[in-house]
Image (cartoon, rainbow, N blue to C red; front, side):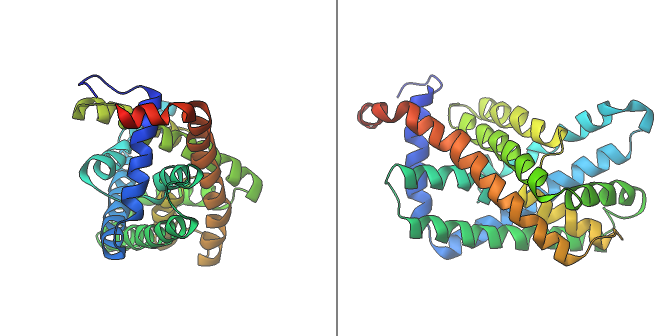
Amino acid sequence: MASRDLYPQEILQVVLDKSCAKAQSSVSTLAVLSVLAGGYIGFGYLAYLKVVSGIPHEWGSLATLLGASMFPIALICILLGGGELVTSNMMIMSLGRLAGRISTKMLLRNWVVVCLGNLVGTLAMAFFLGHYVGMTEGSVAEKTIAVAEAKVHMDFGRAFVSAVACNWMVCMGAWLHFAAKHTAGRMLAIWFPVMIFVLNGFQHLVANMFVIPAGILAGADITWGQFFFNMIPVFLGNVLGGASFVGASYLYTYKDTLKDCAES
């Protein structure tokens, strides 16, 4: 393919190839890259909390906008620098499975290893930087607790729908970044869809793995049981958002072009 950016049907072929590569990755590779990805999510959320906590309440939604503009750096580090994020893999691996390129066992292996690795990375960030260093304590604690409690206190149905919308945008950012041929274009492709999910406070599985434990450690009225229960609707919603609204939709639309893309 030429140096131009890719068309949607060409992105589909790239993502399918990516699903095959991920399916062939060793467990140790997936584990290391997923822990790193969890760490990057932690850095992104710390930046968001730092910004919104330091802006006067009178600024209203502008504070949220400025904070939301910081978080996409996490996804940029993951997608461009190297990392395994279970939410974007929900789209990539589901697409590979639906197209018959990988097996269900390969898909589940990836999701389980990457999800656990993401959890380790985010928990480490929440404890060591958030709690031990104090980056989610002090003046930032109020916002950390407020965000964590808002996530946990959302009922199952609303958390599920919010999670669908969230991963629709996250996976759209991942999808679009495959289209760009240059680093700047890839960064911009990731930035704005991801910023939308943060701006609206949607439920993201891995982001919640950081902010809810950080809130608990900062003194939020949340139990660990509530944290793990929150993961159920958010996981399911994220799967639907990524696998259906991005993966399955584009596979259905462009499946007849796959042979041409592979030959080009």
